[in-house]
Length: 217
Image (cartoon, rainbow, N blue to C red; front, side, top):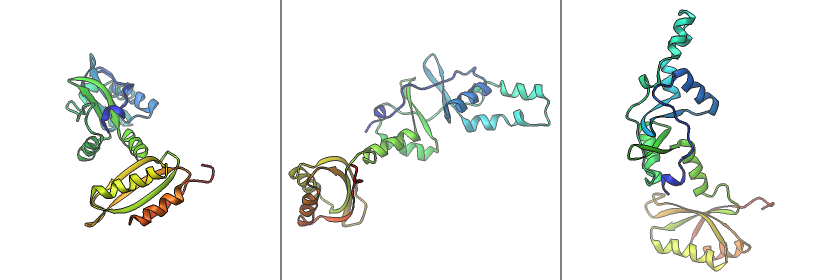
């Protein structure tokens, strides 16, 4: 899964001369936490909600007069933005970007081609990808099984699903479940679920848990 499939290509950006007050208003209006800063389509920085709050203590300082507080809000984004943000390529694997977000403690990463910004990917995008990959928003029974650390065990499960004409809609593997076994979770739908489950047992597949779909599915 690549960044290109999940990034937001229709994004809002500001330029270096945008005031902190204006940038803050954009963040509030759209419920964003990050804004790319661009110059002629080239990424030059990123400004966050936290950056703005740190930059504007004087704007809410009651000891200052109204004129001084107004001047504080008119400070430019360029003075407070991060000028060397972490960036991604559109063909970077999604898991690499999730790792970068955790490593650098950032919630969004601009996606660039050369210096040109082509999108932005956020924590919310990563979460949505996780939901779809796991099939959390699809119909069907969710089955969790333990299998040996070999490829043939995976093929056995797939072959049994195919034999009973079950529609396999999600498939995830946790290889470090235990020294001897890996944890396979998949979601299937079809009319022969019980027969398929019986054959999984007969094939030596240890079934941990089956979550059945609601009756209205």
